[in-house]
Amino acid sequence: MVEVPGLKCGPLAGGFGAAPQTVKISNRDVVIGYPCAHEGAAVTFFLLLHGTVEEAQKVSFTMNAFAIHKLLDSHNVILAVPKAVDTQWGRNDNGTDLPHLYEVIDWVYNTFGTKFNIRSMWSQGGSWGAAYLATLACDAKLKDRLRGIQLIVGGGCPSCSNRLSCVVGQQELEK
View (cartoon, rainbow, N blue to C red):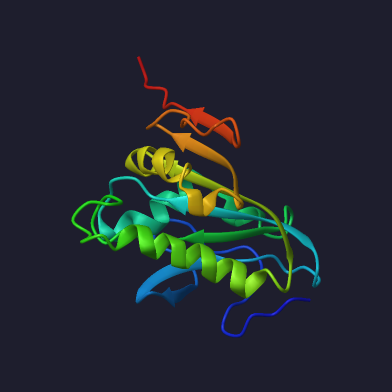
């Protein structure tokens, strides 16, 4: 069984008001989850980006919008849920959000890449997080890692979608 000091494996608490486990990456709390699996197990890494929300909602809203945190063991998933400096990625951040995302991705690969076989990386973004992700997905630094994105209520498939999978979801409103 793979063990990372200070982080328990398995499904994370993610309901509204719950406080899932975090690590400090570039002085920001990042929710991290990983499966209780054997060393060398094939896993998929998911990076979730929140939309325009206040600080208190960044993690709980994002995790409840795409509840992959409940499937860490059953689907061998590594999960990272970082937070933007402000209410939106890339806004009022003095250029620090993008380097932070690189550091989160590198931290996951450096921490888990020698323990598990990370077969692919996917990312999901909601609203502004989706629009931000639609641009981030084509970043040259992610070319060899990012295999697919899911954009919920924001953004469309990026220009580089010929090299990655792209799923776009729209919210249905009551009539």
